[in-house]
Length: 319
Image (cartoon, rainbow, N blue to C red; front, side, top):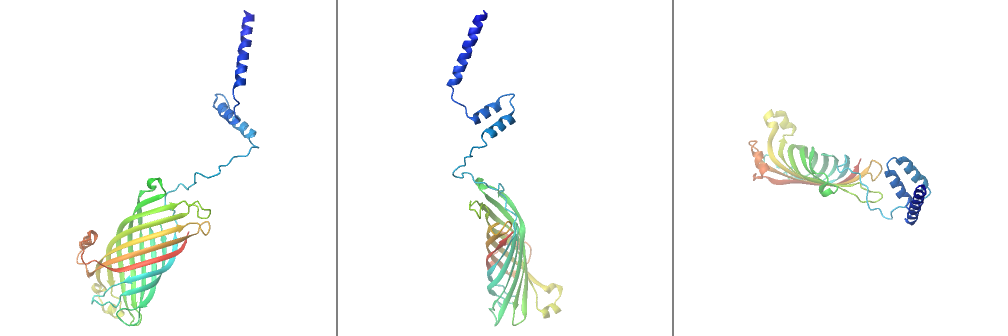
């Protein structure tokens, strides 16, 4: 009995040995993965053994980069831009007497500070007066601010954000007849909404990388344009009722296109190129009641005529 068990054990050992010799060799990485998956085996020891065995081997690198690294942030970066340029300005405002002597058609120098949801613009310049000899000077300032309601932050899984801009705007303009020392002061205010989009373009270039961002928005707003009596003589004898001569119903359409090359000039400084166009329409007559504003909103105001347009091509820096 003992001899039979010994013979069976020897035969079984030989069969196992011959089977092991006939199997293909297992790679080191396969040994590591198999050993690590076995119960009771320390994965740290198998990993260490693999690193020691492959420390002298060169790591193979792919010939082409198939997956591009992105920032993973689809939201607009909160950068501020300072841009300057020239403004093609047309502003045809008539006085209460129907005079066109304060018409301004010319070119002014402009500057804009723009950030996320806010723009502040200044423009200043002289041109030939229309209704009189000499020159007329224009000084304008405009502030637009608000927020964005995002509809899509990654439209179709692309780095494209689509949103609804909500904007409040207020502005001031001074028109002065240089030779006659007469001036007209205007204030305006409005509220509006529109459509906007931003896109981050992953160029993959060594300098630009993914720092090229484009913005575009179109906002239509409604409000009022007020004319303030400005001559020193009128102000001296004017009462509170005549200091503000009236409110004209107004409609603005603002188109803003901007491209930012972020960190192009350094770690925190880039280049901004922008185009801003504003179309302005207002009524010749003053508003009698607040309900007339609804006619402007619905487009039923027949006396609303385009009388102003500003085109501002600008370039500057961002940070």
